[in-house]
Amino acid sequence: MGNKTVVYKQKVQDNLAESRKHLLRLENAFDALGQNYTFPMSKDTFSKILSSVEHLAYSDQIIYRFSKLQDCMGAKLFRSVLLYEGENINKPFLDILNQLEAINIINVDEWFEIRDLRNEIAHEYDDDEEKAIEIINAIFKLRDELDTILRAVESLII
Image (cartoon, rainbow, N blue to C red; front, side):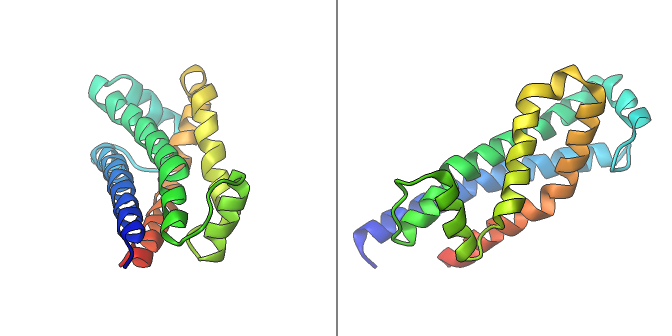
């Protein structure tokens, strides 16, 4: 293994560790809320969450960790994977995504759904309860997809 390959592999491992940390904390927040509520959540459930400082903190943690996870994967992990694979990363992000799809790391359409959800959070989460419910329920459904992507990267560098 060349020196660059070792460095790039370490970068992938570091970015994976950061991504796993965010996913674990997101899962922990869902688990904590799941002790009192069922998912997908209803408007009534969200009203109850809003009335509890502790439960609202878990809800906010879900949003925050999802955003951090998506940012880490999109801005760091994906590029480090391609560097490890010996690819040029000085190209449009769509080309990077297409390369990742070609090596079975992601599905481009699914990644755009994840990214679009992240963008919705940045613009609408605090202002609209119904949108907040929709976002948290979408994150709940996307957890497995995010884990699948991380597992695909892990299997690549083993």
